[in-house]
Length: 255
Length: 245
Ligand SMILES: Nc1ncnc2c1ncn2[C@@H]1O[C@H](COP(=O)(O)OP(=O)(O)O)[C@@H](O)[C@H]1O
Ligand SMILES: [Mg+2]
Image (cartoon, rainbow over all chains, first blue to last red; front, side, top):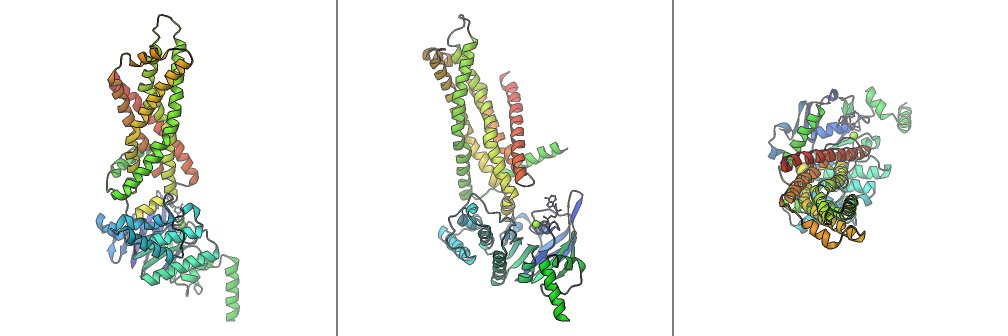
């Protein structure tokens, strides 16, 4: 469980987040949606402690992040996995070395234990014989899988994904979304996903937070998002022709 | 104001470089990789430039002394002096600011724009130590590069003088042994050590704190080269003033 209270974040004079409060539950896929530039990445990086913020608090399981000592922060970070928008794989390491990296850094496991774990998570994300490839030789979808494998290899309690399916074709996107949801349910972790993709919303939006102009404009789930009258949300949801048609059919069906 | 801010950030980065060290088993590999990239990878170009510039220095000196009263061994003497005092430490360091410096800036800068540095930070790794400390350690081997440059520069001078008929091998060797002042070598290696530190840290600073995308990585490499060279030239002046006069 992650609780955010009244989070404010500025760059220079520009206020990007203007007081956001919400919470993300364990075992659920929590989505943060909003247009490009609405502050999703900034929000998630504040949650991770990568950006300092001026006001507000972030609590992991009741413990306020900014009040932790350096050692406690490090312990907490070892329970966090993050999938960055561009995957952020280390390009001088092979795929297997990338996935092994957190284990090598933070555990005292033997080489064979680490190798077994790497095999296990790579199999979990459906990558079987890519161990010795370099990230640059892998396709976008493969890189995302590797990034997910690296994020979950050290059994995190919290998983963050910044636009996990940006730049992927629709079919691969759905596979990646479902993979994240399965992993979330399987290991009962708290997952927070940034997205601007309506497909993800419909697939895995167990909880949805809608950001607009630095504020939380709406909050709900995939079941309630199609019923809301909130204009900002409907504008976002029905911005594509396809979704407009879906809505038309929905209305006609009701009549 | 911005300059002051950057200078402050640079010194904080250097302090941070020694804090919260990365696990030794991992660090060892990073250092070996950087020695390969930064030191071994530069030997070829350094050897090539040193040999031929050494030759040119010798020829220029020879051509400028037509007076028969000047002893023949002056060619060797003058070549040795210019190579040990300036060409080796300073000139090669400027070349290295271009080669090694832009490599460091662009590789760290690329890690910044592709969020690899964020990935390290999220894991709780001190990314400054992880990325910059190994470069600092590898450049402790930089004096060896400069020694090789000095040797090949003087050798190049000899080959050019003998081959071009400006001096005999005997005269040249007598020249390079003439009036040898060991403090000049000390001075050269003090400079080398300082320049090695500059070469490791200023390009890293420009890569680490860059903002933007791929285009900015290119710009950062250029700015980094300019600043590294400017600082090397200024420190060269200060150290020469302090040590030799
Ligand atoms: N490091 C930064 N410095 C200054 N402004 C930033 C920085 N990162 C993001 N911003 C600004 O914050 C706003 C939100 O960006 P972001 O969170 O990346 O949006 P998105 O919702 O697309 O992820 C944008 O206007 C962006 O220009
Ligand atoms: Mg974003």
